[in-house]
Image (cartoon, one colour):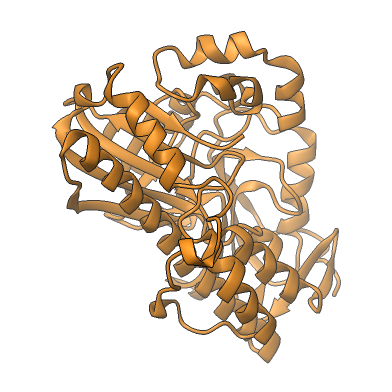
Length: 379
């Protein structure tokens, strides 16, 4: 499959100049076959194959690299009918952290007996081998956080109301789905592969992408339930179900545009249709935002999914000390014994979230700003 000699126009909303390697990666996907439009979000940064913060539209081909292997990764949030001060103290915060360590595993539940059954609403995977993985590994990891930039965070809004935000995805299932389908995908040049959604192989992959999106949402909801139960046991407050928000930022789905129906791939980019509620976190220790989409078609009705990395993990680990991490986190409650392993997640390893929000003010409208009270994450 040959690349197009010249790529489609690329629309960008940038918080900082692009680096040469990011420019090269964007040019590669813009020249790929059947790519009709490309939009770059202000949190864009280098990743395998296609940069995080990239949105593309095709007519029939699906590019796994433009979704990523953590299919369905996204954010969820819910509010509690109490002030954040109820948690932000030396009695409640350590108790909640202890409960989270018990009931929200970082990697997996101890056994199938400790895990929940797979929700029937997920549907059916296309490959028998994937169904086997789902029945065991998928069940053990349902309701677990994962490492990297995934987190569970209690936050306060501008009225001191307490909120919970969770960032996680499809865990092992997204990786296995990607591995199973890319093995037989067509080479598209530049290290990319594609599948044709008009053929059985492409249809099977797209089916499994949608399965992983639903699994990731179920995973976040299970953690919301566990964290809410922990808060109820300690503060005797229950989450407000009407406030629940969930949005994926790694997916591909069919959407209608003036030029026709397009398969929109988002990798580290949130959908931002007119009136659509979204969640855009900063880095650990900085502000997060609830937003409403403006439906900008040139941006493929999308926005950033967060602040975006300013340093690679390797560079951050070599440049940011434990003391600096502690200083940057300030009064945020967390397991201080993990600080030594969190240098690659320090706020200074990420872009300035306020600069990112300014760069996309025509893509979304901010409805709520939140600041962290307690952060729980793997390392």
